[in-house]
Length: 360
Image (cartoon, rainbow, N blue to C red; front, side, top):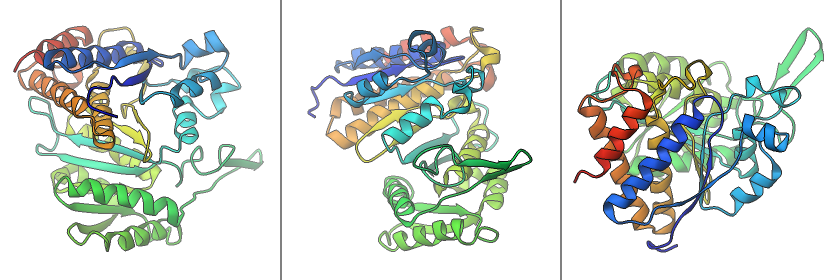
């Protein structure tokens, strides 16, 4: 890929607030690209969630997966799989299908206190690198099926999977990222009560860490890490952990940084990446002009930056920088949605960010 290539990006609006916030990200990226004279992506909208159920009979079709395979990256909106009709409600949700189909093994979730936001811990600036294909979530730890079973109606069983190969590759992602930041990795585990599974995870991360002598490595039990995040989140740089711990801690970190509405995320392998905000579909506020689009806008910027780093695409990096700067400037000057203590609705906030992209 060269810097003058036009990216082809999939857009899946999803459910709940998705049709409000995902188009906002597209609009902001287009505005940022125009402002700096870079080529805007060519967006390809695809059905997902309730729209796909109506049009194709399933929340995410094989045809959509085939189209995604031919694109440079994707922006995935939230899904409300709990509201899908049977049997889709109990099947792997759309994001899970995409993640498993394309082996997106790393979920990278920053938590950053934004100037003008309302952080619990000012100065929070950390990234949680979450292993995305194994661990203790039943939809991630088997080749097929959900990883849960009920031998009797009154007994339910789920198992967790940790492998050396899976841990090694997520550990390398965390250490490489730390080298671009403050060179400090914390591995979070629960080896005192899960010595074989999370103990293996901890030990393999330690082994990988020997190849990165310039990066400081320490470890914490997950409960201790959660407690420290509440008051001392600013002490963390990069946290690496298995998927369930990473999911819980990243939501906590997002709130500590100001709001889960600002929590961006990308899911990636070594060759593919997908932007996906860390929060859910929030059906209770859908259509009410209350949703904060910051997380999906910053997730899309992170996707552009990932593509730039992996494919020598300088134009995408410049666009990502302009998008992020516009969001930060908008919030810092007092324009924000109610979750950050502001008074702007979704549409007004997006308009302000678009305006900010044109500022030098």
